[in-house]
Length: 519
Image (cartoon, rainbow, N blue to C red; front, side, top):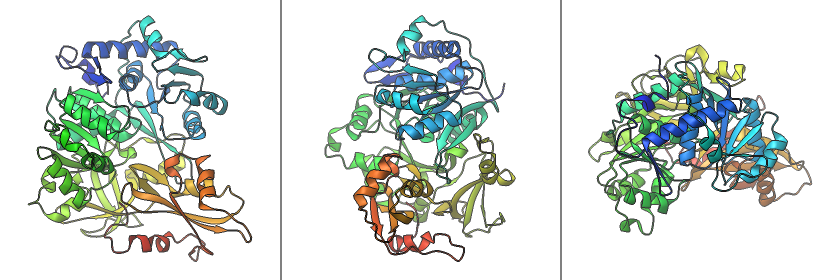
């Protein structure tokens, strides 16, 4: 058989291993129970109309049911559409309709959004209530469905079969559904495990959101190495430190801002975190001062950085733990590492010509982990996958040792707190205000979030608007993390001869004196 995501559940001994499959909110789920519930959920989804390859969504905080959802959909032959929990109802409805998602699982945190979703979405047909109480009107209770279901056999979808449609920001202002196959996801899991070996049967903490490819990837790596997976609903520094201590966690994936919140916790010294052996971080490079602080706080822990994107399932390069040591070449800590085993990587100019060592250009990659394309967007797929290479939109260079350095973004994208924010989407929201003549949205340095969203506004003659009014307007149409954190008003914005915004000139004062133009 070709690669398939449910394979670990069929491994000899998976169900009989003594360690639990999942720990969540004090509840422990055995391996046998987990596989049984996965097979029951697959049966439920089939009876509710899920056909082979159909997309099923979930709008929820992290939980044991989220993990059952992922594997239950795959077991039943469908494809997952994990919904971004930070989106507005309009954005959620767009993603459901874009890939024809008819079944949606919703937990207590987001059940109040369902009436708006039903009113906005043309595809949504069935809502499963994956919460703790009684199923609200118009929904079906998750636990009741599972109790009445008869487990079914695995559909064994595999290889190039669609496994997931994961939405990421779009340069046109609309999210794009990244189509990932079983082969894509399994390849990345195996390649990362080669670069970052794990101990079978250890304990992994999932604190990053599971709708995000980073959190989902970490989860899959833990499942493939038969670990006990401790899940927290969302990142909370006290909850994470408590879990590390009580469950003797051995590995975790965090973004640097999360690491900082842990080591800065006022009661950090009161928690026993000595079990932690591995910390993987991504979404941004780690600041040297924070790394020093983290290494001192977790002296028994090895640090690895992963660089990638949703379109690559997600990892492209890994910065090994050896590069984080004091005796290592100090410049390596500023790098994103070397390519994973099956990822080819090039630095190219605007004509896709490969540049020599040290040459700065766009980072492109190819390999079996690269997406199938963007759902229902052939033109954007063709542009991104030119000549079989994924064009990342990131700009960087490689040194003589093969390490990759990311220095800027070709796309107008801002990464704030680990989330992608495309400036065009924010500009489109601002443009709805009749008082605005022109706007430019850029990323500026932010100690907490890495980058923050900054809007430069030109008002129409005689018009008046405050920064607070612009921010309030944006919150009505886009997710809160995409809204400008700061606003400045100008008489004009620099334009090129072709009439395009010259954002470099706007960014330059904020990034002056820094070697990187991204955080």
